[in-house]
Length: 398
Ligand SMILES: NC(=O)c1ccc[n+]([C@@H]2O[C@H](COP(=O)([O-])OP(=O)(O)OC[C@H]3O[C@@H](n4cnc5c(N)ncnc54)[C@H](OP(=O)(O)O)[C@@H]3O)[C@@H](O)[C@H]2O)c1
Image 1: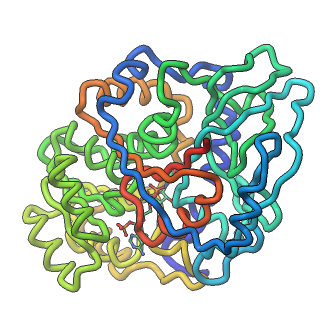
Image 2 (image 1 turned 135 degrees about the horizontal axis):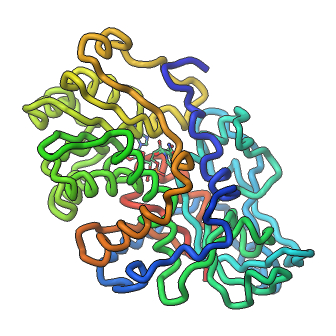
């Protein structure tokens, strides 16, 4: 694999976050402000997805009872694009919690782009998913039984549930959620992707009032929050995404100043027109040709926050990095800096407090894009990589 940024740069982010060696371990992650206004701000987009499952598989799923643990396993690592056939369903006994362990029943989990990078098969500091194991994800759920004094049955928790109905965890892998808050909030704005948007923009991009901030994958989970936080910081915000409908959501619902469809043949010219004063901060979720176009719009002294490379995840042959590096970086004195969200783990609570206040006041909207049922997960992931989601894609279990 070649390129400016290895496409697996974000491999294992979720896994690493799901196993946090952070100061917030065992610490309730809710705050007073985060527990108010439970859903007044919440925009929920329900989607019915075609699953692409055979009738046989669906019938097998429906025959299962609630006494079993149902799982989605990685059947094979994808060759080329991810397919639902890279997954298989399995059932087994509900696991038992050992010493110091906690049994959790999953209520929902997030489907995020970074986990596709892990499926490219390259090992990273956090490991890489392999065939035969449960698909990894961050989820929320209820404690069923606990052999840890830190958790009681009925507690709502956040942790590395994966795509399965029950899972056992060491107590340090779980964080408590306030019982009055919709736990799903901790998969969106107050979760991994919300924290990524917050720290990537504010610490790496460092927007100043009046700056022009550009963000790619702007209607996705990280992106739609980046743009709104930039607006809160009095920047002018331009989103780049893959559809005219998404562009309208950004400008009409979320307050972006402009939005540009990168699938449009006139993209470069449209981006130029949308950024008449150039770009001071580019939050890069995609790499590829959108990064290439952004480089030519950067102002002297601009900052590029390298968050991810989603344009190069769903393939065996990622493109090389764009032209203009390092030439444009030198001539325009641009800072281009990568980051991982857990670089800021010691400050998660501060970020959650501030974003909780923004959510409660209506200054920040957290879009979720939900599907229902474990059997929907593989199709929902394939669809996300094709741009089917708006906001954070979440799978809710019954
Ligand atoms: N650095 C970190 O610590 C960290 C942590 C979390 C996530 N991330 C990164 O953040 C980025 C966004 O992740 P997410 O979970 O929020 O996903 P997301 O944006 O909710 O979903 C992925 C989106 O990527 C867009 N996309 C797919 N193929 C594309 C292509 N070829 N070119 C341009 N856009 C494409 C699609 O939207 P369109 O309709 O616009 O195409 C799709 O909706 C990823 O790169 C991820 O790796 C980084």
